[in-house]
Amino acid sequence: MKTVLAEYPVLLSLMIGITAAALIYGWLQTGKKQLGIMGLLVAVMVPVGWYVSTSWVTDREQIRALIDQTAAAVGANDHETAVAVIGNVETKNRARAELPRYIFDLIKVSGVQIRIAESSIPPQADVDINALAVVSAKGGQFTNMRVPRRLFLKFQKNDDGKWVVVDYNHTPLDGRPDTYSSRRY
Image (cartoon, rainbow, N blue to C red; front, side, top):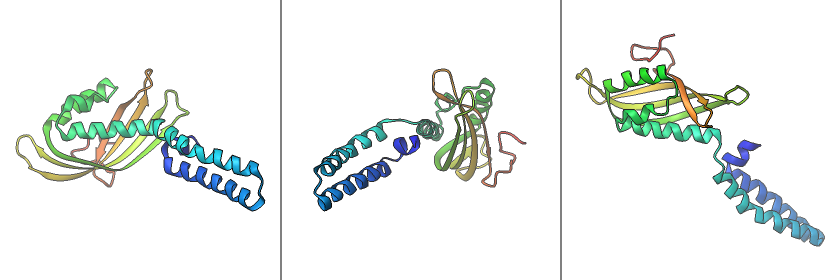
């Protein structure tokens, strides 16, 4: 229910609006003022519900914003901003070693799947992303190559309540590691 309230303002407004319309219809059919008053009160809840839904930022929305910010930083070749979202020193060092080997011209993120395990302590999330990069290798091995990749990110909520990446891996779209994958399992 929390997800519907926070992440789907149109659906929430639609549900409230249908309830208000049903109450007003009941008033018109029966003539009972209480139904009409309740219908108007519920109708007033539509903008309230919309406001609550758009202002309440969920964990899933926070993670999605981090993904978009990091993709923009990688696309701009701003490596320090890109690795700032990483909370694990070992993982951060791996990313710092990997990113400077390439020059990114474009990053497109699609197919983001976020699975949050709120019962874990601290809360964790597994993210599966499809991305397309237009990239050149430093040293000229290849130039402006379109590279579709699948990224697996593990997020963890730190003590400040912020989400950070604790591990990542990227593979071809089929999920099997290749020579460019950050890890081979």
